[in-house]
Length: 621
Ligand code: SF4
Image 1 (cartoon, protein in one colour):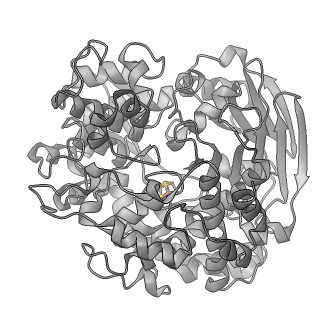
Image 2 (cartoon, protein in one colour):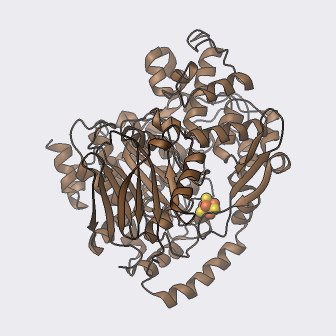
Image 3 (spheres, helix red, strand yellow):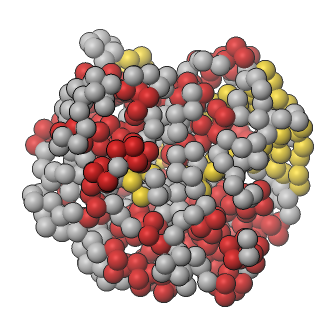
């Protein structure tokens, strides 16, 4: 088999059974890889009343066909499961080296069910696997866990692990590779913790076969030239994901003070210049990626001293800077270090703290609700005390570890005006008030508010350009509702292929157009797909995930933005602007043939795209 290994490892932690299933070309040809394959496997495991901590809830770790090849920006994998945070489809996407090494170990993916009584880790090497004791590792942070497992198994292994946040079932716990590559969103680390699975270790050297090696080699030379000449790639190499910070601050893309302000003069202190000046000591990359956008930082002394390690990404700078009004890059690097070690998502953590700060400032809650912490915007000590208590869930950490939606439910109606979630997931650091398409991007994202769940944000913000797809090229004024539903449909369909199933990195992948990625995919896999074939399969994968959400109770009312994100600001670049999501959604539902009340795809649509199994579950119980 080309691109794919044709083998998925199935592990049951209750029975300790480990077996390998061979996968056909036809199956991969239909579901492509990554989260397309994961969604199909999840549907096959679906049971009514499934909960995240059930032994039947699978952890699905899947690579795409490109991982392990020399293609730039594709060494990525996804982890899917029922999300402990949102109660719907959970999915998180991670770079680094693990995906390539899983392929070298002779597997495309791993499906883990059951629950262990004692801490364990999974070791997979050369087409075989075993479950090993991890009692000694329980309680260790992700840095120490990886260090220990490399000592035990050799330097040539790749490790993903959870930290204390995952062990203590913080609903937004993450899974970490090489300290700074995180599957951060939707709490996949909690599912590991609930199964007492501390880590997965992979080892191997079996190369990935390429269907058309000489043509691929020639084409790859051209692709590397494209990377060399692309100015966005140069900016990412120079300043990492935070290269967009200054522009985001100026154009109102960066949310401020829990989405309530449009201007923050002190915010200038968090841009590329200060980052380099104060904390940067090196750069790193993912397997076979010439971009090298990962930052290495160190703080040698002072209150925020940290050893050399991964630096904060734009999203973390946005959350602990703009949202919490703290203009100190050393402080943010320190918080990032805690989150990476403990293993939790900085987007949900930062947004939840900002939500509580906003409620406190407006008198909806008092200090006693905050376990005695005087949590305010700009108060570094109070924020740090809060961050430090999340992983072990003590004091205010018990509250913050719930995430904003559960806290809002505790408080009741009064909290609803302050919340920033869609489908239970906190919105990331991009504001739809200056980019109306993003209202659909967030509202319709199958995992809850997310800017990379489809290509709506990368395309509508001008970060990506696909001239071959008219709806992704001509979508009108960013602050008008016109043509945005059409954009959303195609951005979802192509995104299901691009960054979900073939799993191109959203940063490095921005160097390429649609023709280039489809050509690379075909040369590696041997499929001879046109762009239309790819869009058709992407469409099917999108409906599959939407259907899974419907099975867990998602209706059209859940596709709306929270009030906070569509209330116009009285200042700044986006002053007086706000998207009308109702207007865009009514057109969108027609295009998708989705019922505007139940939010379900029609029976006819499901039959026409070959999802009769989903139809039965949705309509016949
Ligand atoms: S662009 Fe950055 S995050 Fe993406 S694959 Fe390359 S180094 Fe990794």
